[in-house]
Length: 264
Image (tube, rainbow, N blue to C red; front, side, top):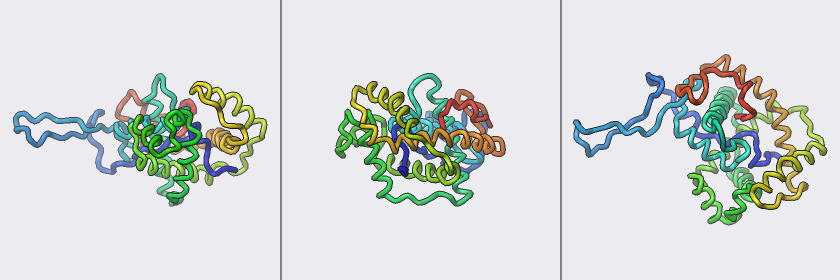
């Protein structure tokens, strides 16, 4: 069994800087981080909004910039957060779910170290299989940098976020996947009905089934795990304190049962 899922269809998106603050809550539903231009006079200074708080998860602050980073990182997993209606809402839901998982990993001491070599190996596989990446010739370093720049990303940023993603997947593997088995017919069905059509949309040839079967197996395993994971996330939300300050992004302490399969 492969150690990592099919990257561009993977169940979990990259972790944005989800745990960015632990200070007291700012008053109001639209709390902002602001600065003033140092050259301006006292009478002419106007606040410049640099960022805004969108949610507070058990004391950890999520910013508008974290949400944008989540959307940007979706370029590396286009099926995990496809464009369309309620894009920001779905991205916020994934960000909140992942924050809850990260908090549990920290409290349980289950954040397994992932080496630079493991991260690079994972990203090398991504660069070969991501449909949009093929058009930019991401096998070359220049092509990879160019592809990331088109999505407001940098190689170092992606490397660290991918490392955290791998840590989350390791945690999920340890906690939820024991005893789940995927059959060869299931793998073939996913390849023909999901993967091949996606590559056709990108006007590129799909890799042979033998080359991606192990990664498809991981995706299907994750789908089975999703049922267990959603129940667990629901209990975390019910027991915790999820405050969403922007009503357009959802309700505080919502159940993940209607999360449309967005995962974490």
